[in-house]
Image (cartoon, rainbow, N blue to C red; front, side, top):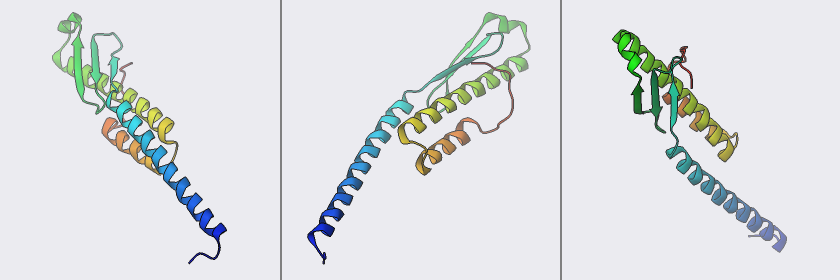
Length: 132
């Protein structure tokens, strides 16, 4: 099957290199998964009457309202909560993108993860005035 021992050795080296590459990539992916699982982001609105924290899935896990909220209409408060939550998700997306690129580089699988997160965390690229 093999013309000579040199060809067989070269094939074995390529297989070893491929296996090592897969093992290293799996370890980086496992580390990335643990890192992403632990991510949270907190944002507040401009006058700091609304603070929100989102978890690694972009879900609201904490909401703090300053007492000054009582002096404004409920609809305005609701808008502030939504805008501030969007700001926290945008910040989370930046953090996730950086972590993915650092761990996996700039290949197709990294881009697929980033694109998936973009669609979950930034569903509408509308503007808001909330600040981190």
